Every structure is written in structure tokens, then in C-alpha cells.
Image (cartoon, rainbow, N blue to C red; front, top):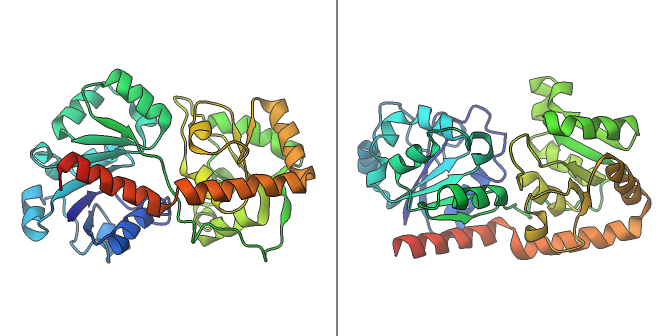
Length: 325
């Protein structure tokens, strides 16, 4: 089977490659699939996946001649960027067999052209990474075939390091957009957490927290913070899977972000508000035996439900079912 994997531009290849590009690599290397990744800078950053150099003038007809693909998967990490960068390709895409993997629906769902844009690409199925998105999509766009397809993690890379020196605090690594700021401020004020936020570092300094140092940092701390509610919608982001897979206690907010549906009971810690977050953070720090029980449950849950291997098999089954390949 030959898959053309259309992506947004790759200006920061170290960002989010763990659950996006590494997932594609896993598919290609373990399931006898011939996959061509195509998008701006893809040839520069991932030559082994993208041997064909990007050109805004290329059409699907051109790519079909160079790489006789069976299906197209549009990695919709950012729909608007994908649309702009691949305009020539998108023009006749509805004439091909298409899967649309939408990862950022929560940022754009209020755009009035969303439904018409989907009609123009005519996907056989839309795979939503966030539970809140699939619920909303099935309600607002029932004419499209859609399915919840959560993130996954490579648990051979994101794994506990039992020889590392442990820091008995909460850690946060990432962007502190509006709904996170007040919670992070409270954690820091109470000396409960170390924060590695994008505004606190230069772009160059922050990049190290995206690479392998990101994993090592999570491994060092007994717990890692997540707040997955956005100003628009709740998301079950990749960070939750990565935290749990590293053997750190996931401390996240209680909202409709898919946590209870994705992960087994007792494999994470939820907080309801600011006071509850402080209480839960202190409880995690002061209860090592309970931490071990939680992280063991989390590691088991990830291994049984949320690895790249498991999600790859699910994607292949979807392809076989939808396209009768």
C-alpha cells in the first residue's frame, strides 16, 4: 500500500514530531507501507520520508506520476496552513481517496468555511484526535464520516528512567496560554512546581525542552502538570500520554478532555479548581507509595491501549475497512 501523507510546513521539525512524524516512521518501518511525506521543508527535515522536494507548483497529478499512491492522508495539524501551503494540490483532491486527520479543530471550528472546505476535499473519513472535537463534529457535521482517533506515544522512547535523580516537585513544560497562566502562577507561588514555559526562555533555549531533554525533564520529576482546557474547547493532548509513559504522575484538570475515557481509573490525578490543584499537588509530593501505584497503573494503561504500535494497527484497520484494500 502506498500512502501520500500531506503535512503542513515543517519550520520547527523538533516540535511535536514525537506523536506526528515518529508515528509515520513507525507505520512505514513496521507495516510494509510505502509512505511519502510531502509538505514545505519536509524534504529538508525528513529526507528519508520525503525524497520528493516540495514545490508549490506541483499538483496531485504530478505526484501521482512520481509516487503512484493508493490513498492520501492529510495531516491537518493546522488546517489553514495546510490549505495555504498546498493550494495547488488541494484543488482536485476530492477526486482521490482521502483520509483527513484533524488535529487542531478546536482552534478553527468557528470558521464559517469549515464545512464547505471539507466538502471540497471530500474525505472518506475524518479522524479527530480530541474527544471533544469528535462529539462536536458529529453534532454539527453529521454528513461526514468521522471517528475519534486519539494521540499515541512511543513507549520505547517515553519511558521511566529509574537511574535518574528524582526531583520531588511538579514540572510543567510548554506554552502558558491564557487558561493555564493562573494555575501555573499559583503552583510557582506555592513553590510546588518548576516551570519551563516558552515566555520564560528565548526560542533557542526553549527548543531543548522539545527534544530529548524534554523527555529527560519529565522523567526527573515525580509529577507533571497539564491543563488541557482551551479558551474554546477541551483537548486530550499528546502531553498527557507522554507524561504517563515516562512514569511521572499526570496532574490534569477535570473537564471533558477524554481522560476518563482514555485512561484507567487511578492512573492519573484530577483537580477541579485552584485550591484542589494545590491540595492534589501537595498530596502527590507527600505520598510516595501512592505515586508508585498511580504510575504503575499509568504505564500498564499506556502499554495496553496507547502505543504507536496499537494506534498504527487501528489506522490500518480503518484504511482496510473504508477503502476495501
